[in-house]
Length: 231
Ligand SMILES: *Cc1c(COP(=O)(O)O)cnc(C)c1O
Image (tube, rainbow, N blue to C red):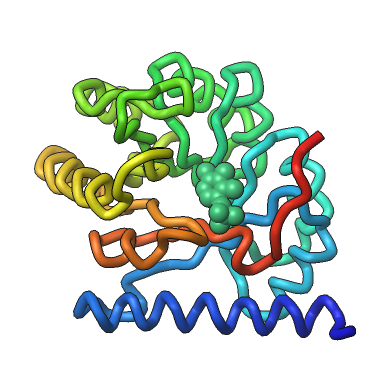
């Protein structure tokens, strides 16, 4: 049996090779895409091993799990990405450790994150999560609501507008959806030129996301293994 560090190292190598190949195929520079390793359901000890393997960007999707994990690894030089649906009453906690929140999809959340950031004396980068299939129950704002939400983030103390995020729809071609996201990003940058981040692509669809122009991919399973189902 190989030990966990070897396993993570081998998986990371594979994922980095997939990202490099996708960049090459798309004619994009390899450093144009940042890997975020989503460590949800895996212990802080894995985060520590990953940091030892050169990972600097980590993601989580539940505050109850992320807050203690970030605290347990506070000695490491990590950037924490909060990628899950976020309840307003958890925003203050998330603002205490997250550097980037990928799931900003309503103005009440903008207000809550802003007051949390100010209270903690931190600056938070916010990505607007867009629903690509109109099913906002899975999180994400409707595309029509993005411009006003962007303006709200820009106006909010402690927040900075980073760009857009999306999850591929459950049905249909991820490539189509990621292209639509890229077009929304182009429109967003006309009003907000520094909002250049496009967070898209997971273990099963990172190639399509990179092809469409993603700047950040969020990878869990392909690095850490298949998650046990949440209780
Ligand atoms: C869990 C999760 C990921 C990673 O998904 P994998 O398929 O395990 O790579 C990416 N984005 C979000 C929002 C997630 O919740």
